[in-house]
Image (cartoon, rainbow, N blue to C red; front, side, top):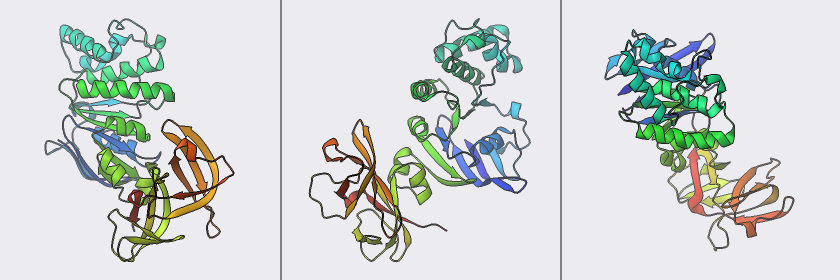
Length: 351
């Protein structure tokens, strides 16, 4: 078990990592998700030993690693730029860590061959890495990280340099490789991309400004975001100001709204999350209604995503909703939509 215990790191006046604690079990894939500059890459560097924490501990099987050099921790690292050696062929790049371990030539040959086969590059050993595509270079870097059989594999934005179409293809490949690899290590996968995190990870740790906001499975995060930041960053819908009232109701700029999801105590200030699928469609519901102007319209596979500008109380509040194609008016037209109370979630404000 990898344990990160109350780790802190400051660079001059900036707090990069603030009292972060998490645990990753062997074979588990944990994604560290957050916007640029939130501290997720610094956290990875602290775990790898590339940076020394100001406070806290990094442990493996209960033993502190703070005095253990990076190359002795048994951790594999893969970064966004891959850091391949351009003057060496694919075989030599993958074999680099094995030679550092002092393995025999035959063992190195077997390990490199197995790693290249795992990433779909059998027969590429003598190819120059400079002749490879971006996706092939990414696989070589992954094979190099896997070949020494690390107990923890850490990947820092490994698909960030690729275009969207190739990233979507390779994230499926990466998931297959990580889940099928014999003797799976614990995996820490740093990304700012929610789709990557949710496609790969068993659990996701969401960070903001050095703080760990929430850890959970993708289902837990989607169904129960702990605060407005998590809901907003995951793109779960629109957040509108609200105050919890008695019973399952909340006061909003449009009057009291019924709620069916769990909420906090009476009088709590916060937001209501209007989920993307909150529109009730043609079925009659005893729920609130919103009226506004359609200011955006984007056809999608499951309907049309419209952006509704409510323009209430001098403020421009926009709400994205997924509607059936026949219910989605053109940009500039007015729309009144009924909301399903089961898709409205009260999120209390945090200090």
